[in-house]
Length: 219
Image (cartoon, rainbow, N blue to C red; front, side):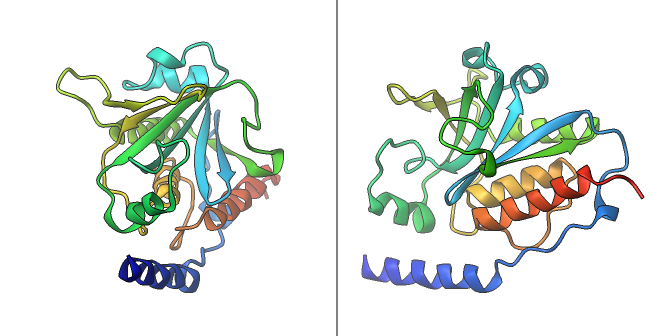
């Protein structure tokens, strides 16, 4: 256990030294019409994406079913054990970073913006093109593991928790965590997110900068 903690400390220091993100420029933004919106939500060390519910459910081939009737849909990605447990012990957090067995997708309906557990300062809106939105939804669909019957692999749902958890594709680690998953999602959406973004702060600050640029009048 001591060796694992030392390894985790070394990884953490590396993140602090190399986790600086680039500064998006207006010239990097899509020039086409941007009729869709995705919200980047920060929950402490974790980031997730929130969508207009009817819009994402109309495009997704793997979401639906349990999510109808909500104004928004929240989507996140994390370790299959730590992420799903209601009160995970520290040992699960350490194991997730250095020896994760499988990842999980968090999908839940929301009716408010900011969503439950977040404040207005924790949410930033990004405008997407038609192509960017479609590519983003396709990326989310590919991130959900499918059982032989063609349905998502349902992991768990805690009593009183509005979220559903499904087994996800890929592999979770310190260098491929919830925040780097969001970064890849935003890049699929053609957002100019750059640099090594392993922390929620790095991801959220770039999203905030992009949102500010999108609100500026065109030159």
